[in-house]
Image (cartoon, rainbow, N blue to C red; front, side):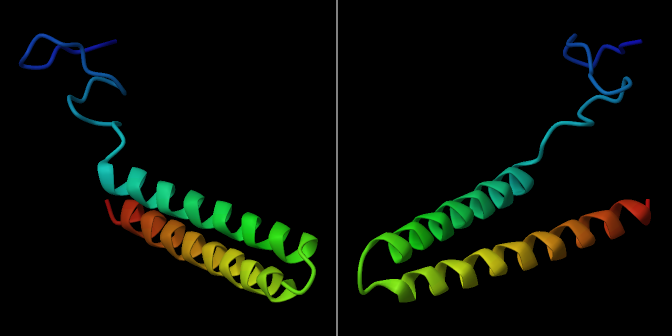
Length: 85
């Protein structure tokens, strides 16, 4: 069942106008985390393949662990915020 919003456009996600659309902060955070994962992968590959740059592998691992920590904290904060509603 779709409900029309004020401008005549049918609202998605159960009939609430404006509900369910991805907000720009969430998309920005996901893009930032994806960028950091790509950087970690590139650093890891360079660290393994280029002789004398093994330290880049360890930097890539640290960046990847940082991304995991940030994503866990971000998901935990989001779930706590939705539980309050």
